[in-house]
Image: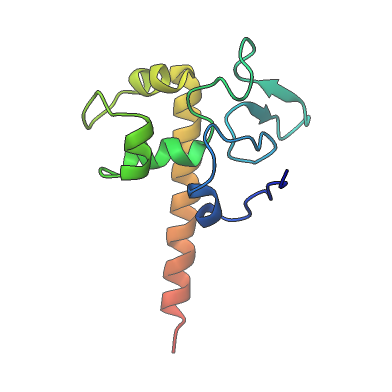
Length: 126
């Protein structure tokens, strides 16, 4: 039996098996790690990692943010339109509205930082 290699980039991950078997990945939704204490929290205590409907935070973001993501659309047909509430997103991926809000805020901070960083790079180009 051939052993699978853990993907190292999003490009390698996109075509990978779903549900994702790599629970240790930083984008996997099964576990959360508290950045201050290092404690693990299981988000789906009654399910195994292979039983949860969405396993990758990047898949979720791609599905809810990008309008035409065919690869994900095939696995999870969209039943609601644009302008989704945090509660609807949470229901779809079995997270609380508050957890979805936290993930959204963290993603927005990361995007803003990257935009600022890219502007600095472009500003200093010869």
